[in-house]
Image (cartoon, rainbow, N blue to C red):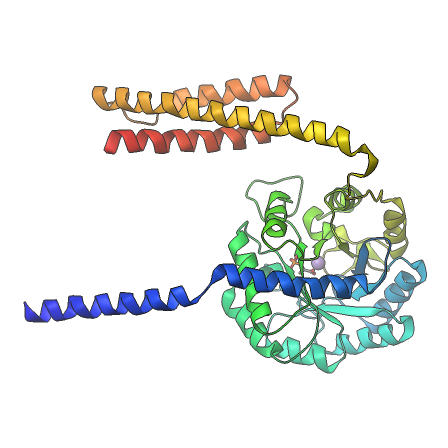
Length: 393
Ligand code: PEP
Ligand code: MN
């Protein structure tokens, strides 16, 4: 018995220690500090003095010196590109495809920088990449989606960056987990990096057909809510996976106040060694950038009408919330009824009926089936939670 007590005491003290450690981490302060640093990031990007979004473009992968020089000089000639990108080490989903040309590509990128006067950016995924990129004078580093998902890798990169002053762009993780994205930003910030930007490149979604990585605009919107000053970029290439939707996604990003775009380009896209379907020729980049409608993020003179609309939206949102509360009260009653009568919470047929009915009705009201499905699933889950609470308390 004494041994058991001893064991319990030990565990309690361990828990105390853990709580003390956790309390030491002041998350609010961390985000506040992060926000201050973002001002530096904004300043750097605005020092580029652009009246349009910052455009980063270049091949998915560096393939040869000729391909790099030709693509990059064509991009520079458009006058619409600010930073040249090239993948040097390629994280591929399956082995056996081209996995990047490696460090030699950095020399080509450096030559392109010399010839065009443009800044350069590459993806880094480990310590070696960081050192090689810095040695070759790369101006901006970015962390890819497959790396952001892995805190070990992000920390490794952060450690390699200690004492280095270079802008870092952090793509969203492959899965729709905002905490992982913020965690990566915090790790890089923790290494003393002030100039951090985020890139929305879409999220992997099972069953998705239209996009290679579905944009989930609400996630970067939430990121901006939590870290208001972080510069936000969009990568339409990896969102779309094709050329057809690139412009529309770029425009959508502009309408959501994004600071810039990263779009892949290639002198001969059809014969690119990676991501051939989504790359475009440099001239098309210029055409797309030219075609973007840039709207003001300020309400301007139309402010009062906008205010009126916003008041209406707020009013509807309040009404919807009140209705949800009423709906959940009914769910509580249903829970009680089911408890009394020994009926399970989930009635598959009924759920099917609700869903089909709402999708049908929603369609006629101009609401997409995807929205109705997502909305009803959330409502249904909340209903189940309420019933569960009532039945099992
Ligand atoms: C890339 O930019 O070439 C790339 C690999 O992108 P992502 O990390 O978004 O997949
Ligand atoms: Mn690519």
